[in-house]
Length: 539
Image (cartoon, rainbow, N blue to C red; front, top):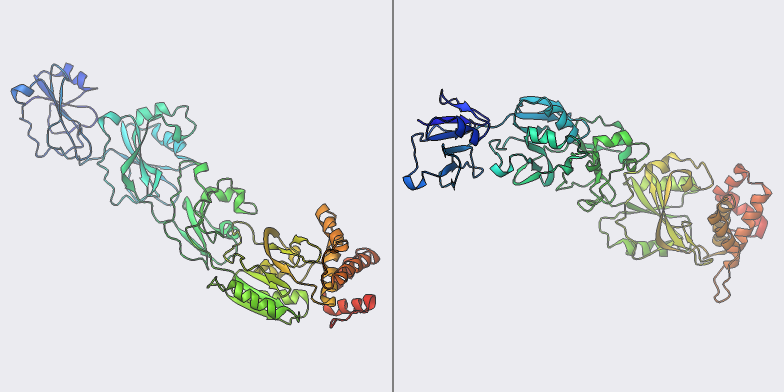
């Protein structure tokens, strides 16, 4: 029997086996003409230890492969040292594994490990901390977010890749959570390293992936994702937040957990009714998920949001029926869109409340009777649920003065905010958080009668008169001064007079809020129009 040596793991099969620092060192120590080099992680139960090479191969170093690599760590070496390599041998099965060190992300390790460590911030710092006291030359780093029930821990690297950091993908994510580590090399190469991606010799193993455990799903009834994230007690590194009305999303992407910058918030639908949120994001949260700096919007087409309802609001406008039929025609291409109608509700706040109660969705498109919607409007538009709930104001074209802004435009109202607002200010929509969407929703046909032209201009210009910004001043001037000499627009004078009367009334009451708020009620408007212009609602 030839001398037997091991480099890392003893086999405990032979009482005379000894440890050597290298094969060259083993050759120096050997007292026989050949020597065996073995690895205790292999199965040698059927190995022929009396085997010798034929004379013409006697000078060669013979290497046995494993089921994974071209070298199992089993050699027959001439004492004269390594020369020509002969790998023409049957595999020696690898059945053992190097020790496992587990990293717990807070959800608990479901696999037996030699040692455990809590994940903190990133993999580089966590691994350096746990490996700094490690006595083993090679280890597996495993993670609590992965399912190892079918993983083969007998895997080992090629002899040419011993000092690399071997990374196993988590699902489709190449920057995975499972590592095969040569501890001395890792500690030396990361001593002054800033991020793990800069490791000198990373090897991304392409033929072995580890499935992640399913991402926890938190279903909630909030209209925004913000309060749901606020209230959630994270135990896992990533959670899927889903609004109750969201459609299922398949093929959820796998987020890299290597460091904070890679742990991104990932909306999975255009309106973010389904969104992946890493635990770190909660520490940044103030008013919106965008307070967290790491957002990945490239997966927003994976799912669909529930289409918003449309509510048509009318109160006796002569063109209401025509515009309602046009709306039905324009929206019929979006088969899943529901159209409701709210008619004849007296008082502005009450009309909005009735419209909100008619809606079955958290937001709804409010289409006012005087708006002729664009036939190509995109009814698949969605609010951004990664922000706090708000109203969204589209643009409308004013055919009298040529302005295009939010006045008389379609509005995507948040149902909850509408129902909670009793009518606090002069502009119901602006009472709450709101955002302008610079998309033309239609044409405001408000000058179909004298009364409608005067009333619409009066109410809008009361609001504009109270604003100090340059844009509001510009718009007010356009309401008061427009030139349509090249065309005749019906009731354009009544629109101008409504604007003039609004400015006069504002100055008369010196901007008193209670006096201005009277414009909310149709009866007061009718009385004032009669007083100022001898105008009645039937004109």
